[in-house]
Image (cartoon, rainbow, N blue to C red; front, side):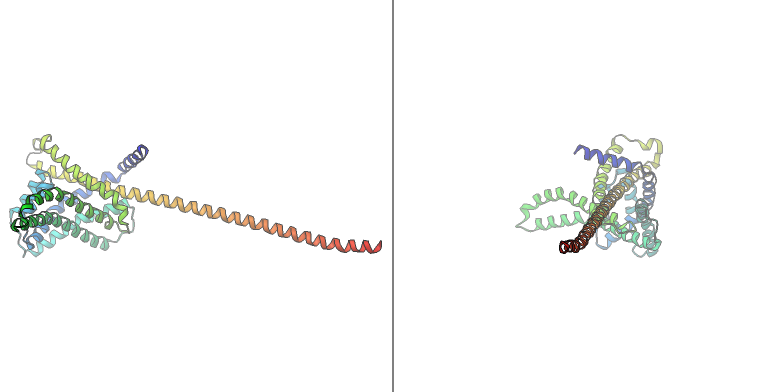
Length: 327
């Protein structure tokens, strides 16, 4: 067990040493920062179609993000009402937001060493990934609404009103695991779809698990650090909130790329094992072939010897008969 843990830590250290780990997280973080406001604009627009309050989006942002980051985003999404008739703005927002997911595709292609890339296909994939991210946000909004709706129905129903408080306690316990499960499944899906080659879903399990847990821990630790220790406002003044958002986004991007690198490392290891097994099978097959050839040669030798003995016996018998008649 200890050797296995050491092996995993050694692999992780080798992954961290890769040059891609110093470049790719910054690339994703930059594009996601540019895309996050348009993305949330689209989410709020979709929420308005389903009569979901902007306050719920604000609460989600406050719960998930560090306070300084949440303040910036909430100011943007709640500052003005979203006009559904502004079609051009929504299209531009969608294109800008897709640049963030396009950066994820480029990152995955770099890590998987995919050289042949189709720009149009990758752009279509980035739009599909953007829909997945939007669905993720919508699901995170729907979970509390769905739970609250059920509890309201239980409260209104006379037979079930006594169980409403217990249901609220249970819901508050399970809503975060459900949210984490939704995040995990979406990350797994992104890891599977993003590369420009076929990746099996089971090959992304370790990376998706690492990223989900890593995001949770990184956000909790970063929130605590910002609240109790860091004083970015002393150095950056009014820009402190933006700097905090950039640092937080870089941490999340780094964990995301690291999770993807873990998937790549495991795939390479699996391919190496498969290659070694194939070579071993070929070696054994060659060995069997050599043995068969050797056995065939020995069999041919035996047959030749037997044939030779038969001929010698035949030539010996007439001589013996001639000697007998002479006597």
